[in-house]
Image (cartoon, rainbow over all chains, first blue to last red; front, side, top):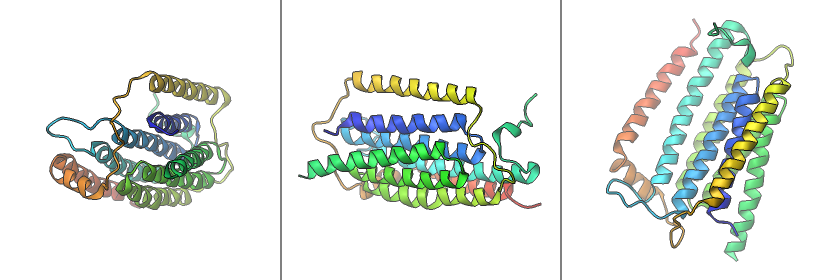
Length: 108
Length: 165
């Protein structure tokens, strides 16, 4: 029987797998991919809440507030991925590497 | 009958999404990571369809798998590595990251099962595109315009950062 809890656990699992990837991967692009996984986990949680919980009762809120929130998360994720990848390309041009361990120019 | 199909569909797509997620973080070659990410994101779009979020499922396929992953593939191909380097961090860091992820997952699962969710009488199953559009232009007009400004700034910034000079 699939209810709210199953969708929330799927969202939490996607988030935690993405968090492991963001912390343990060495390639910067792989870290960006793991961050996209985390954002997808969050979106699944938002849309599941939108479907199963009682609708919001404020004056300035819509019936689909959860899905609108998820849409904005997707837009911001797209912007962040574009800028992150542009930075990766610029750094690669300078240092010829995309390994996280070797990009320590800001370290003291 | 549709209930049974919906349940089976949820389990199928949830397992495929998690398999894609594990492949994204565990695969050795960076190109395989991107392909596993496509699998994970497409399965999440199917999960959105199961949650009656039709517009969001289309946007997920269009924007995430159709644009963001392609952008990542471009970046992968523009940053080739000469030597085959290890994909995951050293043992200690990997173990700490794994423990942290598992602990966080258990914590969140505990919260999910012990909370009294204010469930609606019936799940919300309406067509969403028109209502999302109306909400974007009335209630959420300010974040909508801000998102437009953000995307223009992103375009300009990405072009400037990746420019060759």
